[in-house]
Length: 252
Image (tube, rainbow, N blue to C red; front, side, top):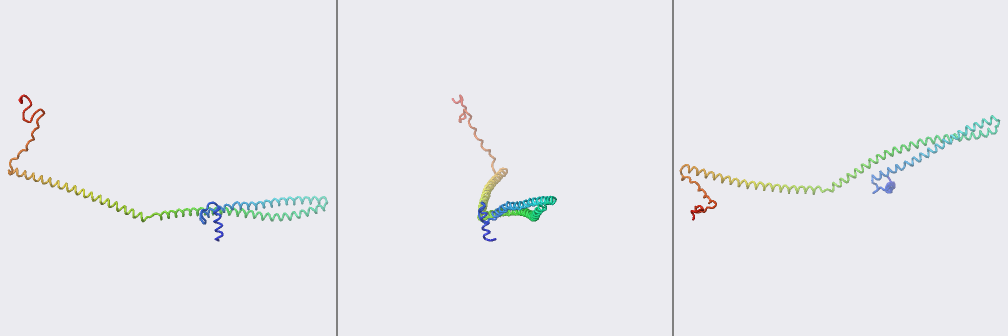
């Protein structure tokens, strides 16, 4: 494609009012579709002109045929009336009408063929335009999809996956260290409690052994009789003194 053709195509798209930058596939295809659609009225106008010529020739042929019939009748009437001079004049007119009728018939035949070809060409163009339009729409959709994929690729490229990975690794290490420290503290706390419990259990066992030893010695008479533990002294009731007397006359 030549440079001038590309420039004209870009200028058409530009003045179409929708182009943002030249040689954009979507805009060029849209402009091409508009150009094809704009040619349809021109084709219809051309076909109409060809058909109008055909109709005009058909009417002219009908008029000439009518003249031929009329002149033939006049010639017969003139001959019958013995007016050979008038009959001869009508015969001259009839010959010219026949010549015109032959030419008109040929022109009408060409016009008929031209009309058929024009209609066929118009129909073929419309069919081709529809196919091209459908193909262009598919290409436009592909172009839009490609743009979306490009945008997605650019977005993915903008992600700093390496930095994010390092951040995740760093946070994972911190969480692992915290979990390990907490677990160690729990183990240490459990060990301290277990140690205290073991000491208490050992002390209780020693006390049990000592009591058992005293019991053996007492049973063997190695110890004196067991003395009962001193009873606690009762507290004086309300109204009594610690001297042992009751409050009453004896104290007077």
